[in-house]
Amino acid sequence: QNVANQISAGEVIERPASIVKELIENSIDAGAENIEIKIEDGGRELIKVKDDGHGIQVDDIESAFNRYATSKIEDIDDLYSLYSLGFRGEALASIASVAEVEMISRHQDSDQAEKIKIKGGEVINKKPIGSTVGTEITVRDLFYNTPARYKYLKTTTTEFSHISKIVSAEATANSNLSFKLFHDGRQILSTPGNGKLKDTIYAVYGSEIADNLIPIEVEDRYIKLSGYLCRPELTRSSRSHELFFVNGRPIFNNLTARAVETAYNKLIDPGRRPIVFLFIKVNPILVDVNVHPAKREVKFSRSQIIFDVIKKAVRKTLKENDP
Ligand code: ADP
Ligand code: MG
Image (cartoon, rainbow, N blue to C red; front, top):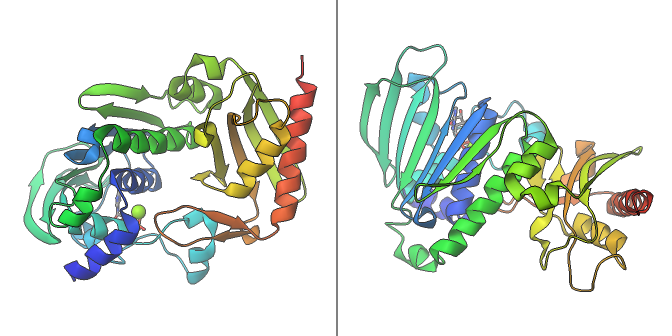
């Protein structure tokens, strides 16, 4: 069983940042309003995610670590709908197969929390404990039993930059939730959770970007765009600040990036990349989710339409705001 979980973990857990993403999404799914993430040594020492969501019932705590354990699939169609993007019921099992995991969870209907410790997929400790409503998961000694994969980890700085990128995107996608991120005891990020995208961008990406935003708002038959574009004077050398959210989830998609870059073309220097925070709402039937668990890539089934709508909308918005 643990071998199967380890194999699955290979798909799911490329690096510490993949764990962070899965844990954050679980906290969001649990209705959390505050999510606190603590990282040590780029995640290889420690990853801790604490939320104030609804928590897990005592009787369900152990089974949450079983493979394919999920409380989230309603029917099979759900698997193909973007609203439940991601793989189902494999994250905790996979993480617990390649690290030491401790979970403290108190369900909202319970007056006591339960603490469980799992290593190599085996429960090594389980007992009641006092805690507030919500869930805290601590992951230590990542890849302790898969040395080949441990060796594959990059430097602390690189691994943490992947984590920071994911937390930044999730915080931006969920401006109604407050995120805090710490690395080796230092606070790196803190968002207000007031539901205002601009305030969240300010908190995450800083004042220079936040002070140069142009709102975009376009509705078409097929898709709805909203969010912010950054003035073309402000650019980056990579796609690091091209953020796309499809139906509320951060995604990677080459098509949307190219559409935006085409619209910015000639306004920015060759080799430079624009800064955008683009929320794309589409009917889920127009989206094929690549169900590969780690890479949240999506494919649009009417990709030419999506490309054109984005390109035109961005170009028009930039033109209207040309000083
Ligand atoms: P999935 O998220 O696909 O259901 P996971 O392995 O990530 O699978 O989690 C397994 C189950 O554990 C979830 O379905 C949920 O019931 C429970 N769970 C995990 N994390 C949390 C959390 N932070 N708060 C409440 N329940 C959680
Ligand atoms: Mg999950």
